Image (cartoon, rainbow, N blue to C red; front, side, top):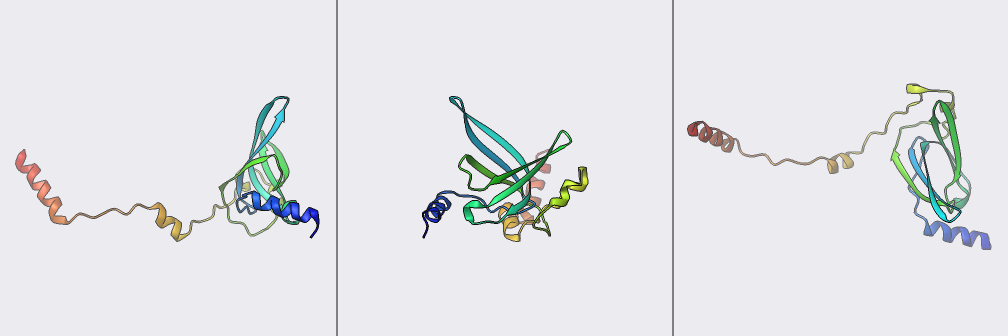
Length: 147
């Protein structure tokens, strides 16, 4: 095995990157040094492409419209100064590359949100315990009698 492949393998094992697909809205936090201070740069946007390569050389293209101007950032997933990648929401897509979103604006550029699985819905819902009907009627009768 090459030395480069060994280094790449160790890098992959150390980093925890969430599963990202095209159509996901992500928040990317980069940390860099500016003179003596550590700065954080946050970039939120839609993943329009994931370019495959070997594991550590994989890149993603993130797009966001700021003041009517489209801004795209191509970022390697295993870049050393990326401190955090958060998936904010996931959308349903039928394409791997969403370059057609560059031409669209406003509501046309929105993607449909992905529906939740039944297991997730069950975990989110709170099951209420039902009281017997007699208990409710007895309580109401006592309130009326007390008045």
